[in-house]
Image (cartoon, rainbow over all chains, first blue to last red; front, side, top):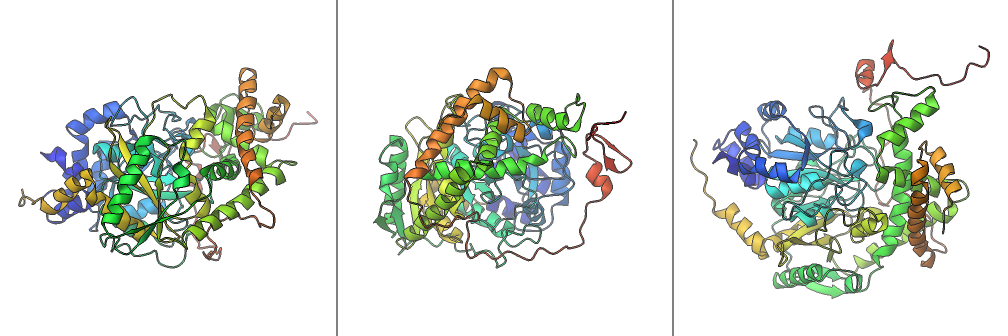
Length: 490
Length: 99
């Protein structure tokens, strides 16, 4: 029976630990027993974990809203008890000397990091196929990708290894895998979750994000992690928005419906999910406002200049001198840099470093980087105008359901376009939430995305909760949460 | 926009990367395809727009003040590929011009 604990919501599991129905260690270990172990063998969501560290984590867990709740953390967030490698050969075996702020806050709230999740190398990818440890598979169809770059935590939360996961979202790396794996995925407002201890990719776009199977669990985790951090100068100084009202419904709210965005190039299953979600929101008392919005191609184009430029600068630190892999045969320091980087970075990372270096190089800066920065200002204003007409926008999380392994590997541009609906939020610094809305006829998860203005996390969670309760899977989940009676202390 | 292979070589050198001869044509083609796509931005009317490098407008940044926290030398060197006498060890940085 113990194997069932990790299937519960984080709130229910924490309540069980609080009431001593289950001990923290048993709660944490339950994800690793029975069916979960079989799943992990097939899915490969995890790259670092060990029983001793899990037990030590559970033993050390203080009283708090997440006490005893296992959490899978993406491998680009620093953890003192597990390696942090960004799934790159260049950081093989690296043990950080400190915890990321979000990890520290997670532990302070009683949460237990039970594993590091697989990812595309340095978070560059949309399928988790670019990991030096090999790909993660989608638990709903093992021939398909879990999305990316945070595919490991997303898949682990989906198949029940843990009720919570942390990822990072630079252009959709939390929301798109959440959509492919049928779980909730929140990218908060830029500056609400500390980036201290998150290995930098595109610093003006990166945000730590949250995976969970329930809207209420996202709210609980957000409340524990969000807020100013003296170690990250870009965190906002005022307190993070209060998300306690996540269950308040959407009565009287207006949602934007920019249907021109899915007029072409979007799978019928995705559109069907959108229409169903819109109906559910209307049934719950929200009003639909139709308008046109700037096509996503412009966001993708802007992103692949801004993000790669920032990446080429951020990844300059990996040179084989201070940490990680060093090429053994280096007669001088220049050869050390070049050989270490050429062998340590995988193909997609090298491609993006080259693109970013090109966009920043003399003679091309104005044509590319400066143009992209102006386009970014325009995109930000587009969202601001849209949020003058609605409280939040409803749109796809991705143009397709989970695609097959290998399908987009040979075509970088096709892979980049799978982020067409998520990238805008990173450019504008606004929050976005991926919400599961049932499954397709073939059994693959369907999802929608809600986007709001800065600090609209409470509104997005309210919309997410409405869809959760209205949805088929959500009804089941809700009944578990409300009707499940805890056994007395064992 | 087509990137020639000499240009790939030039930016690879700037980025301290070495693209193998066999992968050069392909890299040039892939980068060209992405730059073609990025050309879409020329269809936007950006006249009079000021560039932004940071999305949230209203978000104030804290003052950048030292807080006394530091990484011990031992911790800093713990993950170094090679170190000696409290320092990171690297191969020669400058050539010995007068051997």
